[in-house]
Image (tube, each protein chain N blue to C red):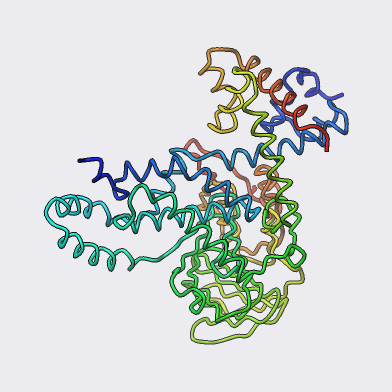
Length: 310
Length: 173
């Protein structure tokens, strides 16, 4: 019996479990198998309940941030005109409509440490990795499927008109297929999982077939990569890298765990090969930094300073 | 007279329309798609559209407008997607929620949800209070204890008991 069991009293352990202070394994020791299954189902139900019942100031603030700003000025005019005449109101409607419809953009972004699924209007889907963002126009979507991506996304495109992903580093065009695109600062990578993908970068075009990938990191020559798995690791809370400069791995860690690194004392161009899980920050740090022979120290400004092991 | 001039472009009015209807719209959408992310995206799109067209929509018709929008979005997606659960890839890992469940499964989920919701509403006042402060307001047990002026142990006990009761109410699988 380990020390932790002594502190789990019989009348509070469920509360601690629901708040993730004790694990499923520890709960299993306190209740019958039938009860454990029921509590897991209850936990799922409560999560859904939280999702569906939370409409409040916070979610409103999120919505408000996405509203176009032009409307405010129009309200005062509108009230005034209504008081004057119907003809004036009709005229205002027409002008208002044309300006309002000029902005049909939808944007979606994933938060720190979380993936986000986005359903597009034709049934295509994008799953965004942490801190990634897409933007697209709603109008004419069926015939003009174009998405602007910043960060990394796994795309499942339904067969249809040409679907294009635009990034700062290049573009990707498909008809119907599954692929990932990663565009973060000067790192550009595309991996094709099914179907055929056309990549445009630096005025050159490349066709990718399933398991083929393409990577271009700023100045460096283009690399062809081979990926045997059917879906990217980060869909399953894991990051995996093969010979990638450390600076990009650090950026990923920052996005997954919401931390900031100070790399003044180390060489971030060193190549990294390895994987880490997104579930536990400490374990991830130990895995990566041990392999790279780096020490890490948290300062009081919450930055983590990296240095070479002596 | 001023009542007639109240319109959707007024942010106070718009916010009220959100706080009043977004919840039922979200539930409506969730139980149509079985997917929370799509529901959230469509709700946002619908309200953004409402805001953009605010001059044309009287307050009394706003609810109808929102429902029409989300319904049309659902039909459109269905048309392009042909949602049949057998043809969808079910991603079993916990992070990906995307699985278009069968209508039967969604109905079962809905019944379970209603059962759970009623059970939560039926909790004793002090248990319900702790439950909602923890799960909806997202306060830690420590913060709840401060708020209610009791010890953390008391908060945890109430939560624990609430969960025992909820487990009894939902029954066995």
